[in-house]
Each structure stands twice: as structure tokens, then as C-alpha cells.
Image (cartoon, rainbow, N blue to C red; front, side, top):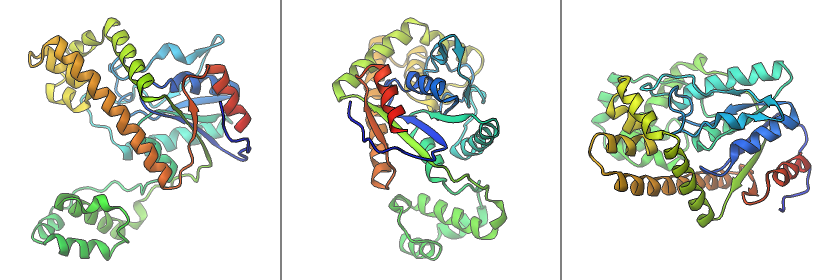
Amino acid sequence: MQMEDRKISAYDILIITGPTASGKTSLAVALAYRLNGEIISADSRQVYKGMTLGTGKDYSEYFICGKQIPCHLIDIASPGYKYNVFEYQSDFIRVYYDLKERGVLPVVCGGSGMYVDSIITGYKMVEVPPDSGLRSALEKKTMQELIDILSTYKKLHNKTDLDTKKRMIRAIEIEHHSTIKTGYKTRFPELKPVIIGVKYEREARRRRITERLNQRLSEGMIDEVRKLMDDGLRVEDLIYYGLEYKYITLYLTGKSPYDVMIRDLEIAIYQFAKRQMTWFRGMERKGVRIHWLEGEAPLEEKVECVMKLL
């Protein structure tokens, strides 16, 4: 396996990322064991209690050489709650400083690109409540007028702000809020990360996704979703969480036959993995350096590659 020989000095956080079913957890745990680290999850669905098989928490993987590696930011929210990236940043900062105070290396592990991106780049940490008065006034504006207004706050590098009127109004709302609430921002640590990505060729990735889906179905993933429903979680909430929870819910509510559910879920996970890789490539275009490892390599080889890089 090839990886650049240049040593990275003075890093203070290790990030292991990549698409679904790429073996991130086992690598992160092995590295945490070698480097006196603890895991911080960067998975947008593993935060929810009771959503275990569908989110791939794989608790058993956190045991290595008779030791359990602690993992933070999983099982911290109740199912039905809509946890967001702002909350993730706040929770991440709390855990990050705790680990640093204890002399423990934070090892971030997860494939939620927005979560990973948010801690690397330190997105503006301002929780902006809706401003009904401002929204009402902006609704009367044309798209060009909204563009002109947003341009007074910032250079329009993020073209996604211009996609729809709704996005434009929200972007203006956020910028307006930041000008009148200057003391509300949370200080984000200036991280010095080493970012490791694990990837497979497309066909190998599809094979791993299929194998893992079949394994989790055999382990009781349908029963997990049924229990969430029996415990009172609304159908619309399960569908909101997507992928396994969406398609199994459609099956359990009689809207999709079993074989159709499996086929559609498998395709949806393939497409999700493709979107993850698109996000990571976007990060790289913005200047974020991701050191990619070939997933097919043995775990020990991947670990040694990272250790040499460090």
C-alpha cells in the first residue's frame, strides 16, 4: 500500500473516515489502542439510542487485546429527536477538551461527511432561530433582490445558497443574526488533524454493502425497527432517518413487499456510499488533505501505514 512518506508533526487529532462498509471502526480502534486514544463518533445516526443494527454501531469492534476503547457521541439522543450538526459541534468540543485535559488522543471515526467537515473547517457555530418578521419581509423580494441583500453580508462562494428562494432567505437570516448576536458564537478549537480515508473499488464496496446488509438482517434488524415502532416511534420519524429505517418501516407497514424492500434498500445504500465519496472529493477540492488507504489491505498493514505517516 502506498502512502506519502512525509511525517506529519504536531497533530492533535486523528480522523478516520470513508464511505459506509469500509471498515473504519476496526481501523480507528486499532489506532486508538496504539496511540492512547479514544473514539469520537462522527455518525449522524449513531447518536440515537435503540438504533443499533441499522446504524452499524458494532459495539464488539471496540474491544481489542482485552481492552475496551471508549467511544463518545453514540447513544446520546432519544429516537424521534432530530439531532443536528450544531449540536454535534457543541458535543464534539466538550468531548475534545475533556480528552485533551486527560492526555488522550481524540480519534474521530465516521462517514457522515457534514459532521467530519464541520469539525475540520469549524463551521460558524451560531444556532440561528427563525426570524418570522425578517422572513415575511424577504418573501416579498425577488430572487435578484435577495442575491443583492445576501451580497452585502458576504462574498457568495457557496452557490448552494442561491438554489432556491427558501435557501436564500435562510442564508440571509443566518448572516443577519450573526451581525446582531456577535457574542453568541462558540469558540471552536483550532485543530491540527491527520485525516485518513478508507476506500474500496466500486464493485468491492457494493459486495461489502450487500454482505453487511444480509448479516444485519440475520441479526434482527427488522425486529429492531419493529420494537421502535412498538415503543411509539412515529412512522414518519423512522422514514426521516432513512436507509434501513425507512425501507424496513415501509415493509412493516405493508407498503413494500419483503423482496422489493431488500432490493430498494440495497440500491439506496449503494447510492448513499456514492454520495459520501462525492462529499469527500468536495472536501479535497476545498483543500482538505485526505490520506486514502486501500480497504482490501490487511488491517495490520493499514495501521502500520498510518503509524509511519505520523
